[in-house]
Image 1 (cartoon, one colour):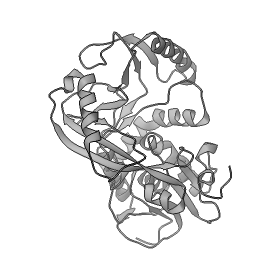
Image 2 (tube, helix red, strand yellow; image 1 turned 90 degrees about the horizontal axis):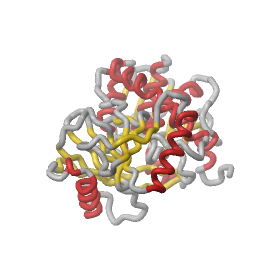
Image 3 (cartoon, helix red, strand yellow; image 1 turned 120 degrees about the horizontal axis):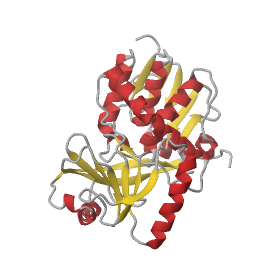
Image 4 (cartoon, helix red, strand yellow; image 1 turned 45 degrees about the horizontal axis):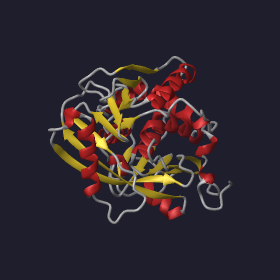
Amino acid sequence: MAMPDVTVRGAGVAGLSVAYACACRGMRVAVVDPHGVAAGASGGIVGALAPHAPERWTETKAFQRDALLIASDWWAAVAQVGGGDPGYARTGRLQPIPDEAAMARAVERAEAAHGLWQGAATWAVVDAPGGWSPATPKVVHDTLSARLHPRRACRALADAVRALDGTVEPDAPDGGQVVHATGWAGLDATGSGTPIKGQAATLRLDRRDLPQLYVDGLHVVPHADGTVGVGSTSERSFGHPGTDALLDDVVARARAAVPDLAHAPVVERWAGLRPRARTRSPMVGRWPGRDRHWIANGGFKIGFAVAPLAAERLADAIAGGPLALPDAFDPALSLPGGRS
């Protein structure tokens, strides 16, 4: 390939999404990652794409809503271009309502969602359907939540980039504009964030067409391959990056909360370090003081949820257009010496 217009450093969901969006605009793209596709936090197994609660509304919450609303078409296009299956489906989510206080909050949020979600999705109090459901008489059912398989989604993006004449390789020099999407290691190197360890498990149980559950602080996500992803932890302090007894507790809690999981075998244990920026918001935008350099990092818990829209907006800016992103995403807020 000729000298690229854009070099993307990092083959996780942030970097690959930006590479795909740039390639769709006719730019020559090279993705560079010595560890390969989805080698870091993007290689996880849960894949819950869940909206913020419809309250205390902010520009960031609105952006995530908009990203979730375009996700179905966006991931379908990725699959069509590259031929890979990201495992995406907007299957919704159920959450328990354990007491009167939770019921009052759920009703308030349902009313708020009616306006804030602009009729494109609902947040409603409904009777628990039984079976695959939290064990309370009433539950919150939202229709904006979706799921995908993180690793498969990243591989599908890499396939789409290649189909658009881009490259995904372990080593190459910078060419053109450079997007830094190097995960927790990139945040650590610049002093702009820290790694947060997450642990999750895959259980063998086929509930592929049913909603994801959020119970006892856990995401329980049925996937299209006949498995269920369960997790994850958020550990600021940890002795080693692998799985440990904390994951045993996650699995035990999930089985206690969801009886269908009681005898489902664990087929994979996963641990990874997720990038959390100092502001806790994603860092997406220009790298201050470095001409033609950009940052797409710090997705932490919402990286996959916001990736489609963040990538489209960043690609627009790289192509010379405006940078239409929430102010909270400005990398200068997290980089040392940046504005406060």
